[in-house]
Length: 485
Image (cartoon, rainbow, N blue to C red):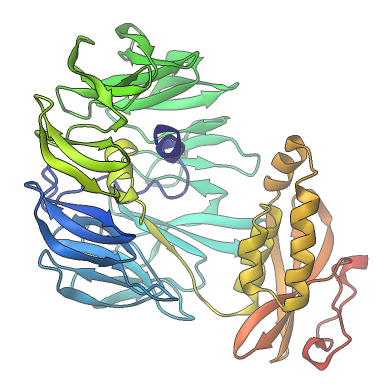
């Protein structure tokens, strides 16, 4: 579980919402999104189900509303109140949690829209590929350009505050926001969009208390808001934990302060942050227990898995079921749930959300083709099949076998490739997307698409040319010889 959650602590594009999983943002969860028989419902702190399990997905309550996804072949997203009644009807193909009073939603074949808690549309983010939740009054969004996907920031009127010019971004905190350049290096900007800490890190986190974690030469360290090292990179992992830092070194976990002094011995097999609690969950051997700020066990290792305290209770796993214990280690909610929503874990551990942004569902050849190319270069062939013709699906199945033979170094290089969109020409039933890639920027290439039942699908062949043997793949108005340029 730790390894799965830990990867979300990196400053990927989704790290935009810092909040507890509570209804009033007090830091104490009122209702937990729990899973029973593959359906999510909500449980109060006494273990009583307040909303019957009935959702395919569920997030935490934020300002009295929780994002839920309906069951069925296609998930529809909406927002419920604490009684389980829909406050915003489930009508969206994608949606984010609320943040700063605004959520982003996407309708069928639509572009991202900002809504308020009544479901009223505030504005539409035209031509956006992705939009992330508001943080400190700004929301990151991306557009497709000749150099690939570029990120900028919107204000709450839907107006661009910082022009899209970054290859990737995190979110604003303490007046700074992490951004990445075309070379894959991270730095920080201020709210005017000016770079205030140079692009020199391989990965970073947002600032908390004027301290951020940074990754360089394969190790993590800490910097202040001038970019000066407080702790030089020396750990295989660091996680922010209020006024201290959970670190990993040689497979063991412990805590340091911002000067680098070890304050809890680095000796545990796994661990989660204290997060303002008096106790932290740690693993010793194969079992989990809880320690205090001195590193002393206050609940001996006995659980198959343990998570941090949420007020006076904490979730634990016993015999593959989740329940809750109090600070004395007494079971107060018997282990009877399959799990808790990932949204809960991420909010506690990584200061983010599982539903912190949306991706456009715009059914145009430009957006469909770009998404397909990204899935292809990231070796996500099964996902690419979802917007592919039958012939293309067959080819992608062959690529699955071929990719299994690729060395890891080649896979890593392929996944670094950026796609730039030059043009998209559409004749109604056929289209060609002209693009370039960062590994071969001087060569224009063509990706062909056909329209089937009002849905654009990619028609791909081994030589990147249209398979023109059937009427459904007849040559589009756009030239098919872009590959020769």
